[in-house]
Image (cartoon, rainbow, N blue to C red):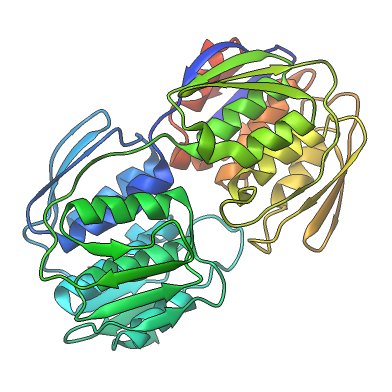
Length: 417
């Protein structure tokens, strides 16, 4: 199993390009199951989760015609299998996104309960309730969700809590349903709006994406998809924080500043200079980092996927910060590993109180999930001495060549077997 070795204490300097968004490409790949033909997707990130989704679609009958770097041609003309096997689903929660498209296309789906990061329940029951409102009969048996519906019907459904994958799943199912579907308390994340736009260009009738009420009127067919994946906002935020935590100067290019505005505002509040110029962000740390409080929220609030990275920054801030996690109930597992590096963190329920220390010290640490692994790498970059990060397969699920990009910015970082 690979590990990452970091010799910390080097300010990062230079320019880094942001890859395509993992959380945007996965629902688009799932949406190809609604189509009959060759789908073209460009600027897809070369990460393990994309590999997993392509393997899953291939097992359902899809054919990967070509994949050259981030450009994918995927033929879904012969999707006949309705079962998403456990071994293909166990490592990635986003695999549940095939449930809605399979129900819409085949009238049946048997999808293993998803796996992925151990950061909380992420209840699948919202997906199930929505499909049942559309006329599906759902059974949970032997670890699988088994759904049947001769033809999905339009319905009015209100989410109990905001769910990104739930919104995407039901929106995809509704595109081929009979009649009108209204989704209330829908997620407003950029990835939801993007999926809606991609589907609309292929013949779907969708209004309101980007607001908390989405209206979908069913159509008879969805043409093959053709799209370019936008920049990953979580990777953007991670490299902004990397520049700040090392006291460096980093240019983050090919990004969408509006997508990371909550992070930019908090970095500025912490005393970090962040300048915008089109698709480029420039970050520079001006001496000591000030402690600031954050509260994670669904978009357009501070993203839960940046909470761990920001906690690493607050670990060396001047003063005490309070971090509240309101999206997932088990997303502070990285705190114990950050404490191994010398940080002072007190966890009380959904709140972490971080008392900044003058410096962190390198130590062996273990990643527990995708974003936690990024936070440990960032902390290692700032720490004195050597940090050894284990379980880096989590990083490979969502970051493209992270150690290479950081090395190009001047970090002393390498991957070892």
